[in-house]
Length: 159
Image 1 (cartoon, helix red, strand yellow):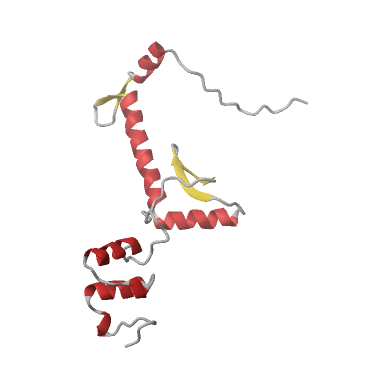
Image 2 (cartoon, rainbow, N blue to C red):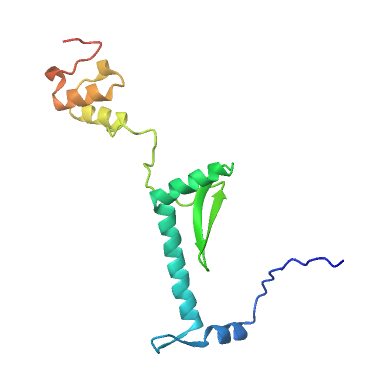
């Protein structure tokens, strides 16, 4: 009984002369114009990279990739990838690709308030005493803006 052989893909580098000859082969398009194989490959490569970028940044496809990854019991960073021939596959990576959504550089800084050092510097420049407020940014900002007596009071200095 003979064994069934599995197809094997072998990629060999070509000589520069042969590669250039193949890439400069002319192709007649349906509209009657001519383009080289190299131009068509470049256009296809650009279109494919744009399609993959859309798949990476689209919130619906990101969510679907996450659901599909969990359904298959995998962990990591999932992304759908389109390839030539209309094949779409799920790739799960251990390291994320370029973040699709811009995230703040310091994820701990979520309040949107200035830094404590910046507030202290501003108070020092304007000669305003804020030592009694400690690390309470809202109260420091209120004092710097002159709003402390307008309803915002320190727990140490009640109104």
